[in-house]
Length: 205
Ligand SMILES: [Ca+2]
Ligand SMILES: [Ca+2]
Image (cartoon, rainbow, N blue to C red; front, side, top):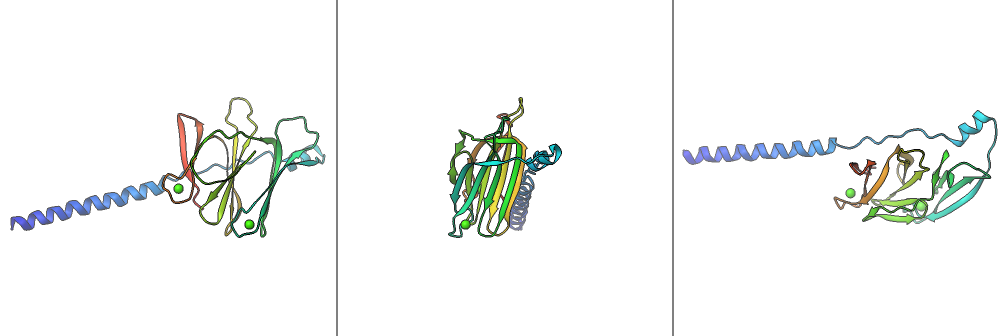
């Protein structure tokens, strides 16, 4: 009889610890960070407001298979011609065999010398950073011109063979690290306002 009571107690303890584990998993899922997508000061708006048409010149052309379908895709970085204000390039065009995407920024993005800790997923590094995500997607990271003491704008665009091309983050944040902490081939980025306030986000596509 005493043995049976003991068995029941052990079972109850095991069940309680199991449900606690499930609760922890749920909390982990709920902790997903909401990325901020602030609107950019587009070149098109600037042209409209000032009633003028600006010309571009090619700053850099990158040819790489972004959606892993065996067909090379193109990213074109364009610079405003005869432009005295900051920025190495002001427009990004992404062309895949089934999608076309463009984004402009009158405040400019810069040719960035990424000196961050990176442990995985590099697809291309130049003035921009491209990361491979899982089996059919890429992510493009570009950094804006730093104004005053704010962190520069970090623009993050995903290129997904199933869901197309999308701006998922546009926020004043420093990028600190790219790694694949849980080894699922999907990179996590660490970013924040300062080294004392670092957020981690996995690209959940
Ligand atoms: Ca492709
Ligand atoms: Ca991961």
